[in-house]
Image (tube, rainbow, N blue to C red; front, side, top):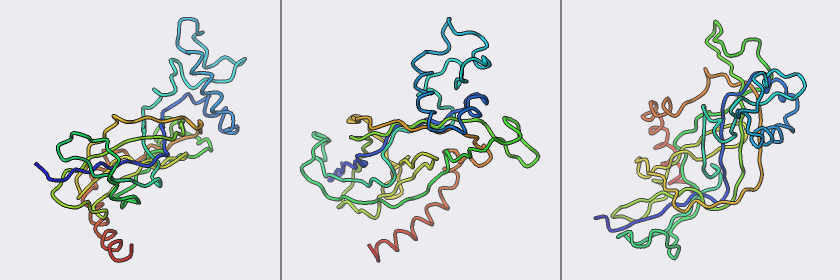
Amino acid sequence: MAKRRFRIDGGNYGGELVLGEVSPAFASHYAESQDHVVEAVLEADQMGWGNDDEPEDALLDPNIPPIPNTDFNMWENDDIEHLNAPYSDSGFTVYEVPADKSDDWNYDKEVYEGEGICVYGREGGYFGNEEPEIVNEEDDKGNKYVPVLCFHSSEKGSFTSWFVDTDEDFDEFKLGYSIVETNLCELVENVYYDKQELEANYDYNDTTGKGYHAEVGWLNMKWHDSKELSQENMEEYWLEYEDNVEWERENR
């Protein structure tokens, strides 16, 4: 059994974010009036589009603003991305807890507060607001633009935690993380210690909402960095990470 156990807590600011495809009409209608997207999303979600009372041609009805989709639920509109995590710039706090796991949520012994070292960032949700000529079809250059909605709830509180079992003191330079970059924010995705990915623990996830943010546009799927694609490049990322660690040890 390891002699030491540490709990890594993410920062106190972050939130939930979803990115998913919406109807072309919805994206076109709100691309020029982004300030009204949150209101439109909340209204569509509360009205329960997709029930038996909805007209079949609701997406095309000229008398009402376009809706995101039939059967719309704002937190389930996540076919491209769904994250719930601290912001990438909110840092980490590390506590030593009993090695026998008898009190994993003890806050008495703080051993580190500060930044980790970024292993990589992936472009999970960068998109433009200008409507392309070709939508939902791949062009001769391999571009495929899809109309999307990015919706984010900004929150404050306790997000994810990660645990490390070791025989040594906690080494801040072994703490790494990856991020997902979107139009609305950058969120922590994975956390690593000594180049090993740690399992996320959400047992004490407890947050208070501070506000909603939303944006529509067209995402080029050619340039969307999936999590699976990023994992294929880990060898290259670790080489860059080692260079950054060396610099941080000398200059931090």
